Image (cartoon, rainbow, N blue to C red; front, side, top):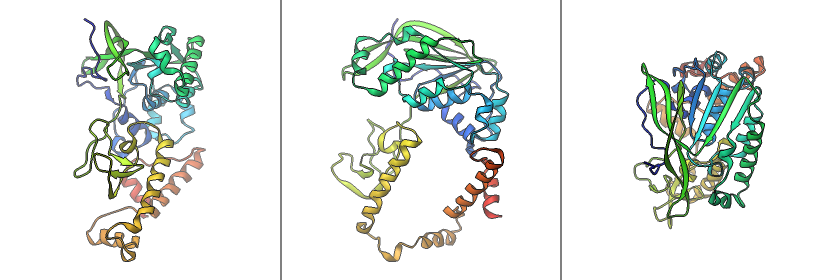
Length: 356
């Protein structure tokens, strides 16, 4: 029977090879917490659930030629695994249509610039329903995205070594395993239906398909979590604020001394290039407010007082000057290899460089 599809609700059993995309991103970016993550790329197909910019990033890394990645600051341990990768196809699953896709145009354009990679899009997925066609009018990002997708669909399969297959209007319903490992993903075909608030939501059609895969990466959105004694909007998953100044739940009163940045401020959208100016804008407000904040006077503004307090309490810490030393070491190592930097991925290694 056809059924409504709740946002990315599907059955995930505990299988090796099923993990959140954020863990994979941490692994190839050299985050110490994910340095020793076991990533097995010995089989030919990976499924990525979601089509936001994080999903695009992990797909690009899996499909890119290792010699191209070797020119970047990707972590060495990840590059070694990617050099030996047997992955030849990455399938991206989007539960709604191309007009509703969360990725931005520059990320989609990068797919077409990957050497030795075909971008496969079914032309049928680009036949827009009336509501989607209407929603695209005036939406520059959606219009450009659909234009690019149509270009990829027209280009088709050229026989390149690797493929990115972009699927739309499909939802995973179950991860299937064999001998404790991911073996396949069962998906259901969707259609779009208008909900009471006017938005287009996916509805299952009862038509199922199984895609064999050795790994599934889940990139299905992020939601902020509340902090003790800090207002939180449960409906949006953000901390209520006015430009970065935290407000009460009703939004009609600023709470002095509390500030928020990034996705907790705006919701989960945008990339590093979005978050950096966003954070800078909040810092500007902090500097504007500092003179009027209670308990802040000239006697408490010396940063050395903070360092003294930390030392008094026996807390180990890293200063900005320490970070600059580490940054200089990594970039110097990178210059020797013609790369932006060579990342240290273990905390003890970082501390050794800082304190030598």
